[in-house]
Image 1 (tube, rainbow, N blue to C red):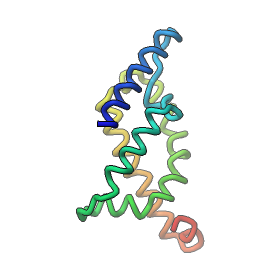
Image 2 (cartoon, rainbow, N blue to C red; image 1 turned 30 degrees about the horizontal axis):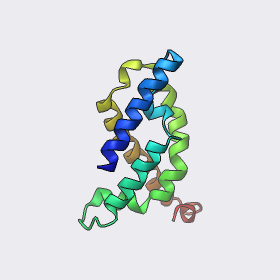
Image 3 (cartoon, rainbow, N blue to C red; image 1 turned 120 degrees about the horizontal axis):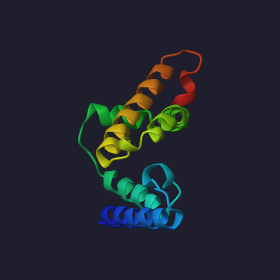
Length: 124
């Protein structure tokens, strides 16, 4: 319930910021430092605390969270401007697909780096 309320509040915040500024305020790219985003993160964390199902993808991502965290900003700096140029890509479905692909890309890069002997201990 907290996630739904928080997403609704973030959406309303985006609408009000867009009206005040006279330009679209994208909640995905510009909403990182808002309270609703923090509430969503905390709610998702609490939601997955008791997740006990075996899933290869989830286990691989969870073993690479530090690597994903360290790598994501570099990849985002490369991909972000390309996505921001096309306003047609700012849809809910594109953001969902982009997030999944982005996490898998960062996980793949982290897994690759972990296979390099000299730097593999940095991401453990």
